[in-house]
Length: 331
Image 1: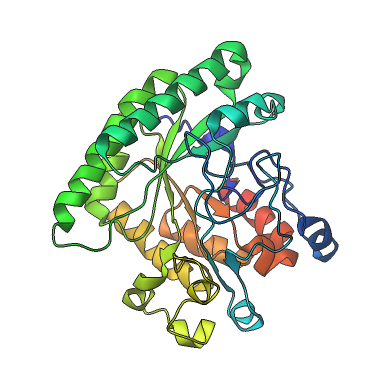
Image 2 (image 1 turned 45 degrees about the horizontal axis):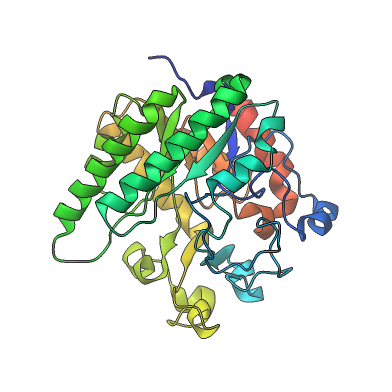
Protein backbone atom coordinates (compact mmCIF):
# COMPACT_ATOMS: atom_id res chain seq x y z
CA UNK A 1 0.00 0.00 0.00
CA UNK A 2 1.44 3.36 -1.06
CA UNK A 3 1.76 5.77 1.86
CA UNK A 4 0.62 9.15 0.53
CA UNK A 5 1.61 10.73 3.83
CA UNK A 6 5.28 9.75 3.81
CA UNK A 7 6.25 13.07 2.22
CA UNK A 8 4.96 14.93 5.28
CA UNK A 9 7.75 13.49 7.38
CA UNK A 10 7.84 11.62 10.67
CA UNK A 11 6.68 14.42 12.94
CA UNK A 12 3.93 16.97 12.41
CA UNK A 13 2.75 19.95 14.39
CA UNK A 14 -0.63 19.53 16.03
CA UNK A 15 -3.12 21.83 14.34
CA UNK A 16 -2.43 25.41 15.36
CA UNK A 17 0.70 24.94 17.44
CA UNK A 18 2.44 27.32 15.00
CA UNK A 19 -0.63 29.38 14.14
CA UNK A 20 -2.23 29.46 10.71
CA UNK A 21 0.93 29.92 8.64
CA UNK A 22 3.85 29.05 10.91
CA UNK A 23 3.93 32.57 12.34
CA UNK A 24 3.63 31.25 15.89
CA UNK A 25 2.36 33.23 18.88
CA UNK A 26 3.83 36.17 20.85
CA UNK A 27 5.08 34.03 23.79
CA UNK A 28 7.12 31.90 21.39
CA UNK A 29 9.73 34.61 20.96
CA UNK A 30 10.58 34.24 24.66
CA UNK A 31 10.21 30.45 24.84
CA UNK A 32 12.91 30.16 22.17
CA UNK A 33 15.42 31.18 24.84
CA UNK A 34 14.39 28.04 26.74
CA UNK A 35 14.76 25.73 23.75
CA UNK A 36 11.52 26.06 21.79
CA UNK A 37 12.08 25.11 18.15
CA UNK A 38 9.89 23.96 15.30
CA UNK A 39 12.79 22.96 13.04
CA UNK A 40 11.95 19.67 11.34
CA UNK A 41 8.26 19.87 12.25
CA UNK A 42 5.68 19.69 9.45
CA UNK A 43 3.31 22.66 9.60
CA UNK A 44 -0.32 21.92 10.36
CA UNK A 45 -2.30 25.15 10.22
CA UNK A 46 -4.67 26.11 12.99
CA UNK A 47 -8.08 24.59 12.27
CA UNK A 48 -10.25 26.93 10.25
CA UNK A 49 -13.97 27.14 9.74
CA UNK A 50 -15.64 27.90 6.41
CA UNK A 51 -16.72 31.39 7.49
CA UNK A 52 -15.23 33.68 10.13
CA UNK A 53 -15.79 32.42 13.66
CA UNK A 54 -15.43 34.44 16.84
CA UNK A 55 -14.73 31.56 19.21
CA UNK A 56 -13.19 32.34 22.59
CA UNK A 57 -9.84 33.81 21.53
CA UNK A 58 -10.18 37.52 20.67
CA UNK A 59 -8.13 38.37 17.59
CA UNK A 60 -6.42 41.50 16.33
CA UNK A 61 -7.68 43.14 13.13
CA UNK A 62 -5.53 40.78 11.07
CA UNK A 63 -7.78 37.93 12.22
CA UNK A 64 -4.91 35.62 13.17
CA UNK A 65 -3.03 37.25 16.07
CA UNK A 66 -4.48 36.81 19.58
CA UNK A 67 -5.21 40.09 21.36
CA UNK A 68 -4.18 38.56 24.68
CA UNK A 69 -0.52 37.73 25.22
CA UNK A 70 -1.60 34.71 27.26
CA UNK A 71 -5.12 33.88 26.01
CA UNK A 72 -7.58 33.31 28.83
CA UNK A 73 -9.17 30.41 26.93
CA UNK A 74 -5.97 28.40 27.45
CA UNK A 75 -5.41 27.36 31.06
CA UNK A 76 -2.08 26.37 32.57
CA UNK A 77 -1.42 26.85 36.29
CA UNK A 78 1.82 26.11 38.14
CA UNK A 79 0.10 22.99 39.44
CA UNK A 80 -1.11 21.74 36.07
CA UNK A 81 2.25 22.63 34.50
CA UNK A 82 4.02 20.35 36.98
CA UNK A 83 1.64 17.58 35.89
CA UNK A 84 2.31 18.36 32.23
CA UNK A 85 -1.31 19.30 31.62
CA UNK A 86 -3.41 22.07 30.10
CA UNK A 87 -6.98 22.94 29.15
CA UNK A 88 -8.22 24.96 26.22
CA UNK A 89 -11.52 26.23 24.88
CA UNK A 90 -10.27 28.24 21.90
CA UNK A 91 -13.41 27.23 19.98
CA UNK A 92 -11.98 27.70 16.47
CA UNK A 93 -11.42 31.45 16.50
CA UNK A 94 -10.38 32.62 13.05
CA UNK A 95 -11.24 34.61 9.91
CA UNK A 96 -12.46 31.73 7.73
CA UNK A 97 -10.93 29.82 4.83
CA UNK A 98 -11.30 32.49 2.14
CA UNK A 99 -9.67 35.22 4.23
CA UNK A 100 -6.77 32.91 5.06
CA UNK A 101 -6.21 32.12 1.38
CA UNK A 102 -6.35 35.81 0.49
CA UNK A 103 -3.54 36.53 2.97
CA UNK A 104 -1.24 34.69 0.56
CA UNK A 105 0.90 32.93 3.15
CA UNK A 106 0.09 29.32 2.27
CA UNK A 107 1.14 30.15 -1.28
CA UNK A 108 4.66 30.87 0.03
CA UNK A 109 5.17 27.40 1.49
CA UNK A 110 7.96 25.33 -0.05
CA UNK A 111 7.61 22.14 2.02
CA UNK A 112 4.66 19.77 2.47
CA UNK A 113 2.11 21.09 4.97
CA UNK A 114 -1.46 20.59 6.11
CA UNK A 115 -4.41 22.85 6.43
CA UNK A 116 -6.99 21.77 8.99
CA UNK A 117 -10.71 22.32 8.50
CA UNK A 118 -13.88 21.71 10.48
CA UNK A 119 -17.57 22.13 9.78
CA UNK A 120 -19.45 23.54 12.76
CA UNK A 121 -23.03 23.59 11.44
CA UNK A 122 -25.82 22.16 13.56
CA UNK A 123 -27.51 20.22 10.74
CA UNK A 124 -26.38 17.88 7.99
CA UNK A 125 -27.35 20.50 5.42
CA UNK A 126 -25.28 23.19 7.13
CA UNK A 127 -22.25 20.92 7.38
CA UNK A 128 -22.56 19.88 3.74
CA UNK A 129 -22.69 23.54 2.72
CA UNK A 130 -19.57 24.30 4.76
CA UNK A 131 -17.68 21.39 3.20
CA UNK A 132 -18.78 22.57 -0.23
CA UNK A 133 -17.36 26.00 0.64
CA UNK A 134 -14.05 24.42 1.66
CA UNK A 135 -13.96 22.43 -1.57
CA UNK A 136 -14.59 25.49 -3.75
CA UNK A 137 -11.94 27.66 -2.08
CA UNK A 138 -9.28 24.94 -1.92
CA UNK A 139 -9.94 24.07 -5.58
CA UNK A 140 -9.44 27.74 -6.45
CA UNK A 141 -6.21 27.79 -4.45
CA UNK A 142 -4.91 24.80 -6.42
CA UNK A 143 -6.02 26.28 -9.73
CA UNK A 144 -4.04 29.49 -9.27
CA UNK A 145 -1.09 27.93 -7.43
CA UNK A 146 -0.85 24.43 -8.96
CA UNK A 147 2.50 23.68 -7.29
CA UNK A 148 0.54 23.30 -4.04
CA UNK A 149 -0.94 20.08 -5.42
CA UNK A 150 2.34 18.39 -4.46
CA UNK A 151 2.68 20.08 -1.06
CA UNK A 152 -0.76 20.33 0.49
CA UNK A 153 -2.69 17.87 2.64
CA UNK A 154 -6.04 18.40 4.36
CA UNK A 155 -6.89 17.34 7.90
CA UNK A 156 -10.63 17.12 8.57
CA UNK A 157 -11.40 17.63 12.24
CA UNK A 158 -14.22 15.61 13.80
CA UNK A 159 -15.67 15.88 17.29
CA UNK A 160 -17.07 12.69 18.75
CA UNK A 161 -20.53 12.75 20.37
CA UNK A 162 -20.16 11.58 23.95
CA UNK A 163 -23.63 11.85 25.43
CA UNK A 164 -27.18 10.99 24.50
CA UNK A 165 -29.46 8.01 24.33
CA UNK A 166 -28.95 7.52 20.59
CA UNK A 167 -25.16 7.26 20.74
CA UNK A 168 -24.89 4.59 18.03
CA UNK A 169 -27.17 6.54 15.73
CA UNK A 170 -25.06 9.68 16.21
CA UNK A 171 -21.85 7.78 15.52
CA UNK A 172 -23.32 6.29 12.35
CA UNK A 173 -24.31 9.77 11.24
CA UNK A 174 -20.79 11.03 11.90
CA UNK A 175 -19.37 8.20 9.78
CA UNK A 176 -21.87 9.12 7.06
CA UNK A 177 -20.82 12.76 7.31
CA UNK A 178 -17.16 11.81 6.99
CA UNK A 179 -17.92 9.79 3.87
CA UNK A 180 -19.82 12.69 2.32
CA UNK A 181 -16.98 15.04 3.22
CA UNK A 182 -14.32 12.84 1.68
CA UNK A 183 -16.36 12.21 -1.46
CA UNK A 184 -16.62 15.97 -1.87
CA UNK A 185 -13.01 16.79 -1.02
CA UNK A 186 -11.63 13.73 -2.77
CA UNK A 187 -12.09 15.51 -6.08
CA UNK A 188 -9.22 17.80 -5.07
CA UNK A 189 -6.72 14.96 -5.39
CA UNK A 190 -5.07 15.84 -2.06
CA UNK A 191 -4.24 13.49 0.83
CA UNK A 192 -7.18 13.62 3.26
CA UNK A 193 -6.55 12.88 6.94
CA UNK A 194 -9.50 12.76 9.34
CA UNK A 195 -8.58 13.86 12.86
CA UNK A 196 -10.37 11.94 15.58
CA UNK A 197 -10.12 11.41 19.32
CA UNK A 198 -9.75 8.42 21.60
CA UNK A 199 -13.45 8.83 22.39
CA UNK A 200 -14.32 7.24 19.04
CA UNK A 201 -15.12 3.53 19.24
CA UNK A 202 -12.37 1.83 17.24
CA UNK A 203 -14.77 0.18 14.81
CA UNK A 204 -16.15 3.58 13.77
CA UNK A 205 -12.67 5.05 13.43
CA UNK A 206 -11.74 2.13 11.21
CA UNK A 207 -14.82 2.69 9.07
CA UNK A 208 -13.84 6.34 8.60
CA UNK A 209 -10.23 5.43 7.92
CA UNK A 210 -11.04 2.76 5.33
CA UNK A 211 -12.74 5.25 3.03
CA UNK A 212 -11.06 5.15 -0.39
CA UNK A 213 -10.18 8.86 -0.21
CA UNK A 214 -8.69 8.64 3.29
CA UNK A 215 -4.88 8.62 3.31
CA UNK A 216 -4.66 7.91 7.04
CA UNK A 217 -5.84 9.01 10.47
CA UNK A 218 -4.44 11.48 12.96
CA UNK A 219 -5.26 11.36 16.66
CA UNK A 220 -6.00 12.48 19.23
CA UNK A 221 -8.11 15.52 19.70
CA UNK A 222 -8.33 16.78 23.27
CA UNK A 223 -10.50 14.93 25.79
CA UNK A 224 -13.46 17.03 27.00
CA UNK A 225 -13.32 18.00 30.67
CA UNK A 226 -16.48 16.08 31.50
CA UNK A 227 -15.02 12.86 30.07
CA UNK A 228 -11.76 12.93 32.01
CA UNK A 229 -13.01 10.68 34.86
CA UNK A 230 -13.89 7.98 32.29
CA UNK A 231 -10.21 7.85 31.40
CA UNK A 232 -9.03 7.78 35.00
CA UNK A 233 -7.67 11.32 34.80
CA UNK A 234 -7.90 12.98 38.21
CA UNK A 235 -9.16 16.52 37.64
CA UNK A 236 -8.84 17.52 41.28
CA UNK A 237 -5.24 16.33 41.50
CA UNK A 238 -4.15 18.09 38.32
CA UNK A 239 -6.32 21.21 38.34
CA UNK A 240 -7.29 21.46 42.00
CA UNK A 241 -11.03 21.26 41.39
CA UNK A 242 -13.82 19.19 39.86
CA UNK A 243 -15.10 22.40 38.29
CA UNK A 244 -13.22 23.43 35.18
CA UNK A 245 -10.98 26.49 35.67
CA UNK A 246 -12.29 27.75 32.34
CA UNK A 247 -15.85 27.74 33.69
CA UNK A 248 -14.55 29.73 36.66
CA UNK A 249 -13.08 32.21 34.17
CA UNK A 250 -16.52 32.75 32.72
CA UNK A 251 -16.38 30.58 29.61
CA UNK A 252 -19.40 28.49 28.70
CA UNK A 253 -17.26 25.52 27.67
CA UNK A 254 -15.23 23.62 30.29
CA UNK A 255 -12.57 22.95 27.67
CA UNK A 256 -10.58 19.99 26.45
CA UNK A 257 -7.60 18.35 28.12
CA UNK A 258 -4.18 18.01 26.55
CA UNK A 259 -1.04 16.76 28.20
CA UNK A 260 0.79 13.88 29.79
CA UNK A 261 -2.23 11.83 30.86
CA UNK A 262 -3.40 11.51 27.26
CA UNK A 263 -0.37 9.50 26.10
CA UNK A 264 -1.25 6.00 27.42
CA UNK A 265 -4.75 6.29 25.99
CA UNK A 266 -3.45 7.29 22.57
CA UNK A 267 -0.95 4.41 22.63
CA UNK A 268 -3.69 1.96 23.59
CA UNK A 269 -5.95 3.29 20.85
CA UNK A 270 -3.26 2.89 18.19
CA UNK A 271 -2.70 -0.71 19.30
CA UNK A 272 -6.43 -1.36 19.13
CA UNK A 273 -6.64 0.07 15.61
CA UNK A 274 -3.76 -2.12 14.45
CA UNK A 275 -5.23 -5.20 16.15
CA UNK A 276 -8.52 -4.53 14.34
CA UNK A 277 -6.68 -4.70 11.02
CA UNK A 278 -6.24 -1.02 10.15
CA UNK A 279 -3.20 -0.79 7.87
CA UNK A 280 -3.16 2.81 6.68
CA UNK A 281 -0.98 5.57 8.09
CA UNK A 282 -1.56 6.57 11.71
CA UNK A 283 -0.24 9.89 12.96
CA UNK A 284 -0.34 9.79 16.75
CA UNK A 285 -0.05 12.65 19.21
CA UNK A 286 -1.32 13.68 22.59
CA UNK A 287 0.78 13.73 25.73
CA UNK A 288 4.14 13.70 23.94
CA UNK A 289 6.38 15.63 26.33
CA UNK A 290 9.77 14.11 25.56
CA UNK A 291 11.75 11.74 23.32
CA UNK A 292 10.78 8.56 25.18
CA UNK A 293 7.11 9.28 24.46
CA UNK A 294 7.87 8.97 20.75
CA UNK A 295 9.08 5.42 21.44
CA UNK A 296 5.84 4.58 23.24
CA UNK A 297 3.72 5.53 20.23
CA UNK A 298 6.13 4.02 17.71
CA UNK A 299 6.02 0.69 19.55
CA UNK A 300 2.22 0.90 19.53
CA UNK A 301 2.16 1.04 15.73
CA UNK A 302 2.18 4.74 14.81
CA UNK A 303 3.81 5.76 11.52
CA UNK A 304 4.37 9.39 12.48
CA UNK A 305 3.80 11.69 15.42
CA UNK A 306 2.42 15.14 16.22
CA UNK A 307 3.54 17.68 18.80
CA UNK A 308 1.30 20.24 20.44
CA UNK A 309 1.29 21.15 24.11
CA UNK A 310 4.97 20.25 24.55
CA UNK A 311 5.62 23.65 22.94
CA UNK A 312 4.53 25.43 26.12
CA UNK A 313 4.66 22.66 28.74
CA UNK A 314 8.17 21.25 28.09
CA UNK A 315 9.61 23.43 25.32
CA UNK A 316 13.25 22.61 26.15
CA UNK A 317 12.62 19.02 25.02
CA UNK A 318 11.40 19.94 21.54
CA UNK A 319 14.66 19.48 19.65
CA UNK A 320 15.45 16.08 21.14
CA UNK A 321 11.87 14.90 20.65
CA UNK A 322 11.84 15.88 16.98
CA UNK A 323 15.23 14.23 16.49
CA UNK A 324 13.98 11.02 18.08
CA UNK A 325 11.10 10.80 15.61
CA UNK A 326 13.47 11.16 12.67
CA UNK A 327 15.81 8.52 14.08
CA UNK A 328 13.08 5.94 14.72
CA UNK A 329 11.37 6.43 11.37
CA UNK A 330 14.67 6.15 9.48
CA UNK A 331 15.02 2.52 10.56
